[in-house]
Length: 297
Length: 338
Image 1 (spheres, chains in turn orange, cyan):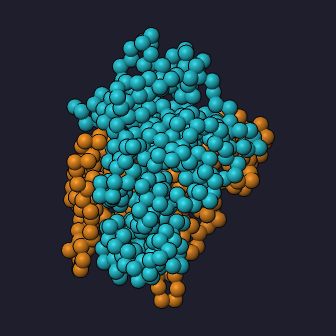
Image 2 (cartoon, one colour):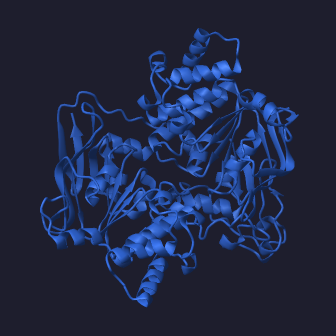
Image 3 (cartoon, helix red, strand yellow):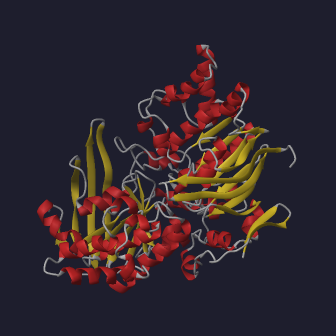
């Protein structure tokens, strides 16, 4: 693998132990890499393991097998140096789905945005700090008039913008967004997707974007990976995935996106995807340049 | 009487420490038998409050300020809790957003459906109630219903849970079904199946459905009639074809264009700028004016009336006034028209 890969996930598996006897394989043998400055989308139904992948990349969960490399550093390595740990903390940032529970309800927006600066001892001078916070609010399209508000007083779209501003404050090189638009209205979703696109172009961070439906991902991502039942089943550049999907699950997911045209929408059947039984062999094959599919037999 | 539900000039307000929140403002709506009416709008526009005020499931701080609700030919505006209990189930039933929190996690699904059957029909025996529960499970498309009736909600997938919730709602043969974002918590592939189930139930049982959603893609699949709500008011009302092929209100244009299908092949998505106004002190004039690129001077001064466009179609925007400049709708025939 060339060194250009910024994030490299190698044969990642994660197993949640429920009891001594029962365990759930949330992620099974997933490998992919993200280039520097690339936007990779990860799509799949709930329970397909995409959030678990995100959490492993962030080091919140420790993979059962495989490893996650970030810029040459093993994220869960046993002997990380102090500098590497600090770099991992500052350079990777996550944005969660539910901005209502990701922001402390008793902290004002000002405190929410100051906290990461306090922790890392950045912008100690009061004037610098004010300027930095105002600048980051401006990036996400918020007015500094909301600084004294509590999260409960903001709308869902505004709260998600505050979460994004908090992540941006650390000047991250990698942002992982775990379904950041799923709990928003369609009209606000479009605003946030446009915002992400602009921010990525301006700041050039590497971006792992997780979503459960394919419609919005098309606008944002350079490449898209599709997950089903804990496995990555297809990975391709966005255009190719939408125009020539290979895996039957991807096809089902694509055709399930509703078309805003009542006559057309009602006349079409939506196929249901059933996983074939008795799969004996799984092979990750290259179908085209940069287009990979999991063949199941 | 063909309209099962008639809402006339309904206004609902909440008392909060910050002031009076005018959640529903002067809404008139009628729901004919055997039709699905979709209520569309952003969160906080009053669509859930409208549903709950008909069911009288609002908290104490809410007050119906004016207007009337007539269900099945009876005026229920001033009904108390005791009268409403009689109507809930037999007249109305409701399907909520999240099937996991609606179902009892420690009770087999079949028993939960049978319980609903027994509550509304005290004389039915346990075995008959169970038989009816299995019948209802088959009706909502759960295969191997007999075996599955003994399973618990956590054994079921999200789609099957929502089907079970529908079975409970249908247990008492309601004439009007309220569905409050029933597919928002489901995956896209399952969503289409549940929407088809709604249509199928409505055509076999002739229930009328009030379907609340914020996603116009969903509306295209499920609805016969559409009401678009903004800041507590209905801004456009029509058949599904009126709304999708000939929308007139700028807010409806914005909602349609915000769908990714309309921007396919372009660099950025069309978003409606800004956000909905506070309902504590709603702005004067048209509440949508400050987000509306087609706003006229009068929009900031006076609330537009409902202009009738055809027998079925009406919209509240000054653009339809004969004195208004002619504006070409940015929506022409649908995203796949070319």
